[in-house]
Picture 1 (tube, rainbow, N blue to C red):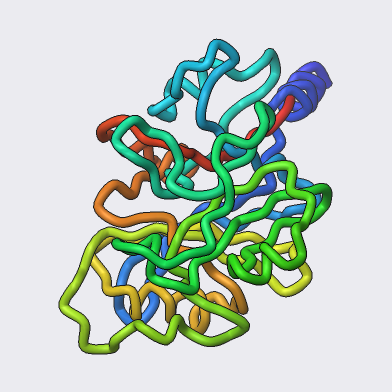
Picture 2 (cartoon, rainbow, N blue to C red):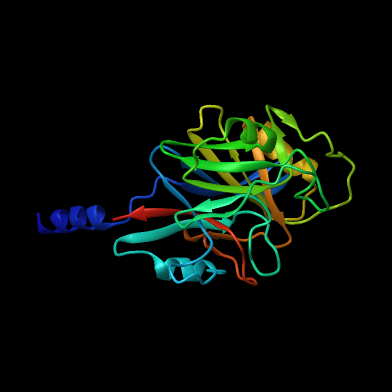
Length: 242
């Protein structure tokens, strides 16, 4: 009886995390994906702490959380400059650090169409930038990146099946109803076309956004991932509460 009670108390005290991370293969290519429920999982963006210092590392976020809070998953969440400031729109609990960028430009970010990962009450969506600009949704958290990987069920028009540009890449996809959110990172270098097909054909998601390549990192203790590396800019994470 005492053993059963102790087990029950341990289960109650344990962090509740609905997010599920696992290793998969698609088209004979290995990936790690983390599936979250927008309605029940606490998805946040992190850039600076309360003193204005850039987090930069997953460990700094873990150390900043309140009593009873646990970081259960995190990855780099958008492109940034050398000073770690966001390239495009970025909004978190501290306000808006950068405005929406609607023009094309150099690099992957400027390979239009790009998009915004918008987190709001009870849903999360990947929204193409021009659509976001017209609708101006009220996002609690928002990070702009690019290019879009999947737009309304179609791959980005500039992706080439025979591309030779391959990197470790990471991104996020969302369901049409804004309830399912899937974060993914490749476990070997892939092209944009391969990565886009993972979201469209493998995960069956109508919208997906590229976060970055080369700097791509994942924190997911459930699959023994705490990737090292240099300091990051925006980070997306999921927090559980005891």
